[in-house]
Length: 292
Image 1 (tube, rainbow, N blue to C red):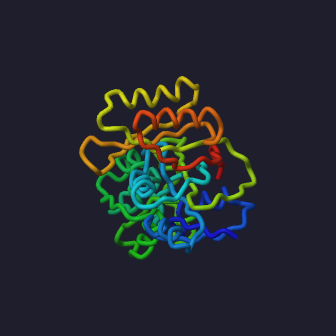
Image 2: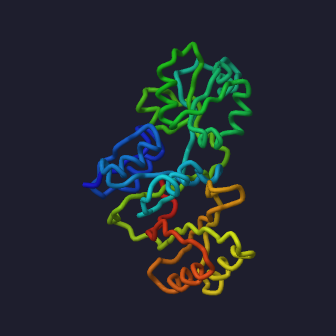
Image 3: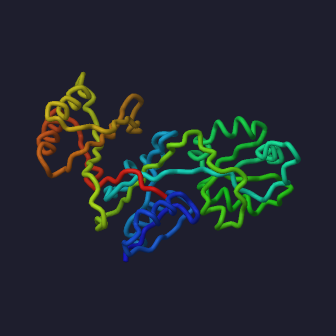
């Protein structure tokens, strides 16, 4: 049985892992901080970690990507995309008065807690229905729910999170489906030193981290040309600072080709011949949207 660390309990990471890993013998180990999730694998307490790295509305989760680059050397073993439905949860509110819009009851709330990425996915809702409420970021969506439960109903504190976190902490669903876009989804990766045998095959994908030489004008164009000439499909490219000096960047590149299959070895050989540094973050099965 594989031990798998993740943010939790009551988080979207946990919810998606339960669904995606159904049929695979595993034990979920919840942690409050992403640093603890990674370190559990590094220390051997867990075999793999579930890491959310990208969201439809908010883009990349930069802190988590930086951990993969700067803090740990854990290859990606699988990825999946999971639909995210945001809910406002908290202590029950007074019933709506006759003729009153039900969401008008939310005026009693003074503070909303959640993870920064979750808050960002609900900007329109917060602006429309809770324009005067204080918005406070916390470590996870479930942590926001836990803190909201500990406050008295009179304090008017709510959280944004999953139905699982509402059940876990005995809170009411004050408003459902409050995300700004109906196709909201999060990309999760499974990282660790050993692969996990999955019941479904997925599509091949390879993630690379490429650092360009400082004295090579047009190096990025040459790198992209190496893929284009061989008809290797790039599905993502993103830059992140190397932390060495201003204007120095890594480039995350995802391609829909297995690492060991031609033309990938030829592509990497050409890129390295340009003086670029190439780090393989993983070659793994990729799974599309997993219905909740």
